[in-house]
Amino acid sequence: MMLSQLSTWPLINTALKHKDSQRKKGIKRGEQIRTQNSEKLEVEFVRGRGNVSEIINELALKLDWLGDYLSPKDDLWPELLGIIDERGLRPVEKLDNNRIPVEINYRDGDGKPGCIKFSSFKAMISKARKVN
Image (tube, rainbow, N blue to C red; front, side, top):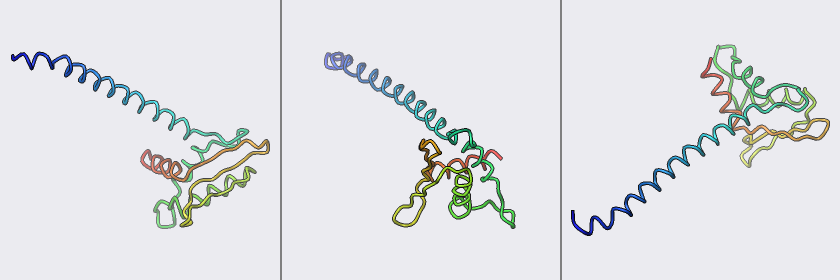
């Protein structure tokens, strides 16, 4: 080995160690985010009025008269809005500029807020359909 190669080895070794530690931190952070997201999906309606994931799982398996799954946007989202309203949680649907659903905000009698985002709703519908 040449002298110049020997002098750069500590730098290369340090860089490789740093890269490996950053990769491990990234994997750990990704696991934490996935855990947090799965915990958010198990949001309960306030005062034990039902579990959002259970209601969405039931909605996901509904079929139309041809035996096809119902559309999350056109069929199931309004039905979820109705279920939340039936339970007295005063839902308010938020739409974007193109009239596409973004989220449903709701409050119970005590004023405790809750929120269901449309993107999470679609993901839960997809997950429920893959399982069954």
